[in-house]
Amino acid sequence: MDLLTNFPLWAAIAGIFFAQFVKVPIQYIATKKLDWSLLTSTGGMPSSHSAAVTALSTGVALETGLASPIFAVSAVFAIITMFDATGVRRQAGEQAIVLNQLVSDFNRFVEEAKVWQQKPEQEKRKELKELLGHKPIEVFFGGLTGVVLTLLLHYFITM
Image (cartoon, rainbow, N blue to C red):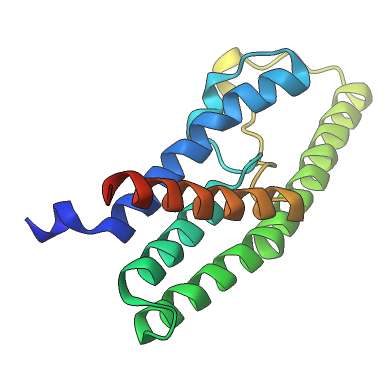
C-alpha cells in the first residue's frame, strides 16, 4: 500500500501523462492538424521525459528536503536525462533524417536507372524514427511542466 502514497512516483507519472496529452493541443495550435498519435510518440513539445524527471525531483525535494541524499540522486538523474534528450537522442533523430533522405535518393536512383516493377504495398520500406530527441526549448518547458505540476499536486493533496 506504500506504493499508492508515494507522492514523488505519482507526480512523475502525472508529469508524463500531462506532457504527452498537452502535445496534441500544442501541435494543433501550431499546425491546425489534430494528431492523436502524439500521445504515444517521442519528441515534441513539451518533453515528457523532462517533465517526469523534474516532477520526480520536485516531489523528492518536497518530501525529503533539498539536503537529502535521495534528492541529490534524483536531481543528477534529471540532469543526465535532460542532457541526453537534447544531445544523443536529438543527434540520433538528425541522423535518421539524413539516412531517410539517402534511402529515398537511392531508391529514386534505382527506379530511374532500371525499369523495375513496383513492389507490393506490404514490402514498402520502414523509415527510421526521426523525432527522437528534443530541442533545448522543449526540454526546458518539459522540466518547467514537471516542477509546476508537482507543486500544484502537492498543494492540493496537502490542503
